[in-house]
Length: 588
Image (cartoon, rainbow, N blue to C red; front, side):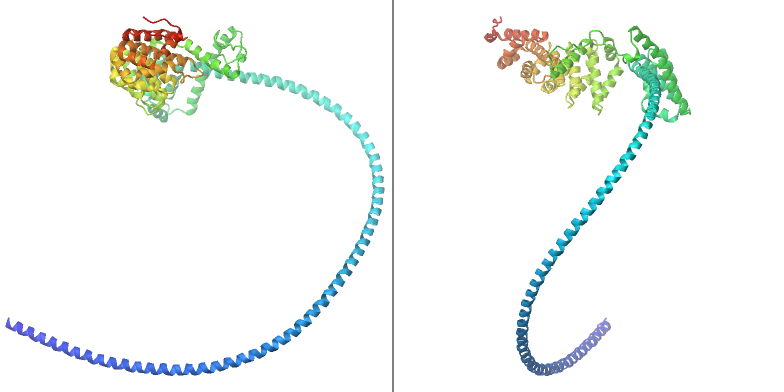
């Protein structure tokens, strides 16, 4: 350990001595550098002083040179000014002489030009006179010769034209005969084409209106395509042909069952039939259908004393023509014709009770229709709601349909949509479900149907209002809980306003407003009958004058329900209704 310390001390001593030696060398180098810097500084100062002396000497010499040049320039300027003045005087004199000479030359040139122009005019006039004389002489000579030649040509032309007219008359006669023959041929061809077109249109019309033939044609086409090629089988599967054909296999017609079972069997095998054969089968089927339909239609027209040229075979029923009264304007005539058509359609329309009962008694159909109400397509939803309203119209169906809570829930949900057609169909379904069925009335009320229907009564669409008022009239009939909900939700005010308002009337179908007023009056009658105290008080507050006026309505339903409302009010509240303005007796 001592040896290590001793060695360490020796190394430190060596390092210290080396450091001192290095510091001494640095000090010596620093002194040498300082002496070099001082010597360089002195040399630079001496060089700068010498350069300054040289520049001062050169500046003095240049100043003397500049002064000498300035004196020389002053002498040259004096000489230039003297010469310039002399030359300017001579120039002014020359300019005056030049002006005089220019004026003399201008006047001389003008006089010479006038003289030359006058001579040219005289020469030109002389030339024109000579040329006109020669021209007129030649023209007269040429005209005389041309007139003689023209007379000769006219004689030849007249003879040739007489011959041409004779030939043209013969050609015209031949053309007229050809045109008459062509006209007969065109008429025959046109009649044949019209007959063929009539056959096609009649066959299409009969196919579209004959339900049995339409089912048969549809099944034949499916049977023809099934198994013919892979893409046809794929398309049939994509369009749900298996389910459709299976449903047709359960149908009552044997020929349809035969074709449907064949098509179902062929769908499972991808055959390969030429497209030409498939097309030939389509064409042959259509020709057979035309051969079956056209003779019957021709016999029918023959029995009426008509042919295919008298029309398309659409004969209106007797008494179905609109008779316009005389003196009616065009606008009124259009409105009256539209109203007549709508009323005629209503007289001819009517429920098919057998089909309605079939729709409502088939659970599969109802389940499919309820499922379709959840589709995103508005048209599908509208059509499904329409089918449900038609099914619920039958008295044996509304009870069974009401026992399906999802059906009522779907209708209440659809009544809240934004589409007015869907709203109208949903309200009509609710009206049919609530007609004379207390459980359905209770279920609709519990699901919020009353409030939704009252909102629909404020719509701007007359169909929606008509269906909503009919539904309210059915739901409050003999059902006090629903009547209470109507009163609490402000339904009395809405119904009274509908009884007296016609702002929602459609000008092309004024019967709508009468139906709305009749439904509203019936709803008020049922309302005052079941929940008389509150409803009667509200109606009395709003005023009974509108109800008194409705007693004179031309609508029998309005005339029947308005007195019922007044009677219910007077019986419940004990009030005597006096209407002096209308000259009515007190109601007791």
